[in-house]
Amino acid sequence: MIWSSTLRTHTAITAIVVGLLALTGCVPGSEAPDATPASETRTPPVLEAVSPTAPSNPTLITPPTEHPVSTPVSITITVNGQPVAGALQNNAASASLLTQLPLELAFTDYGSQEKIARIPTALSLEGMPPGGSAEPGTIGYYAPDQALVLYYDAVSYYDGIIPIGTFDDVDTVRDAPAFTGTITPSAATGAAPANGAE
Image 1 (cartoon, helix red, strand yellow):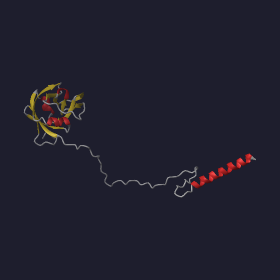
Image 2 (tube, rainbow, N blue to C red):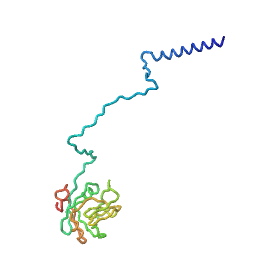
Image 3 (cartoon, one colour):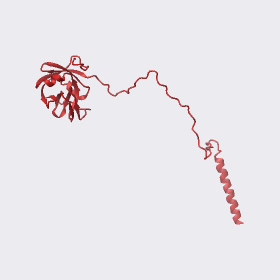
Image 4 (spheres, rainbow, N blue to C red):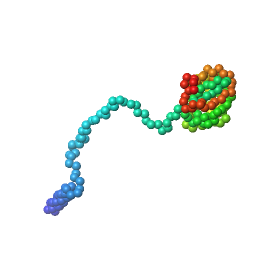
């Protein structure tokens, strides 16, 4: 008898708890429970695919650069009294060379591939590579010797070679014996020489 009374009490308490739980879901202001049965999955809404239309006249869009590229600065190198047109690139080493111009330098031949002359003040190497190679007609800076170099023959990569510009008349530089030459900014700076002319 006691056992059936306890069973009835548990059944009654269980019914009350279930009823209270059901009522808490219906209290005003509370969010409604998800009505989706566990066996069903929600299907996301179908969106209409829109393909971009190609412009009728496509143009290449280039991302902006942080620093605008300046044109090379024209210079004149005098080799045994003969002017040779050259151009310095827009970089830190070239900029520091320009502050030293005009320069009179004593060039000597080195390795049957270049004319080299020591300059009075070292050039800035900020942002410059640790080394490089040179094609004929390259103006370079050889950092270990603090020297300006006019390459008339190809030189493979070497630490310390910093290309800073170009010159036009490779034959005149190659064929000249040791010479004292002057390097000056050209009258019309800002443009690279074209075909040996300033």
